[in-house]
Length: 218
Ligand code: PRT
Ligand code: MG
Image 1 (spheres, rainbow, N blue to C red):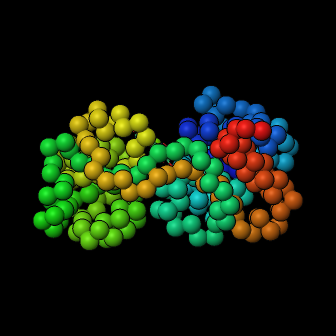
Image 2: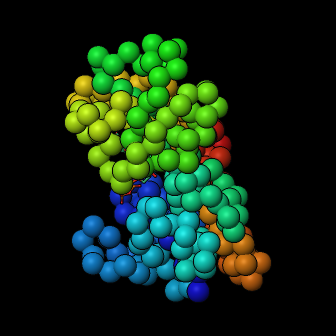
């Protein structure tokens, strides 16, 4: 049996076409089913639904053989014990620093002020500001980062941005682009050795599907 860990929402939705390219159909819709283990058209392949931030942990400890996870989540997890064969180019966005429109970020940085930064992504934020030589107090949050500067909890946030509409709706502006983000296929290293014959074809089919999307000419 091969177990693939996915999170509901954009990662599940954008992984479906890749699974289809590997000849695998998921037989239940996670939005209507309450099941956490979904069967597929392959009797020996199943999908488990976990929190996005739990995907690397499931794969690291062998609760799943494979998983799909954002680069953001993977960096925060640390990636230990995970083979990362493919950038799937799905669920694309960017990691940015944002501040209230009235906050003079450039001056604050120039003057060497200590910035209060709220984020779910403390490892990425710590490394980014250390690289710039900016002193920060990091405030760990688990969601709704946009609220932190509006309530005086923080001067700035580090968060994911795709269309920019969430920032705009909360009068926040992007002041730094930290990195581009997309989702990765992660594989348990022991499973790759022991279940090589079942896992390799899935990796190869995903790789071909991505290459086709990047260059659609036959
Ligand atoms: O929601 P939950 O707490 O369970 O976990 P999660 O938020 O990590 O899961 P999910 O499914 O929301 O995101 C899974 C992965 O999708 C992330 O780890 C990213 O790699 C990727 N991804 C791509 C995004 C976005 N785009 C994105 N726009 N993840 C989150 N967002 C959020 C962002 O945090 C912000 O609140 O959407 C908002 C901004 O969107 P725009 O379009 O308004 O800019
Ligand atoms: Mg979310």
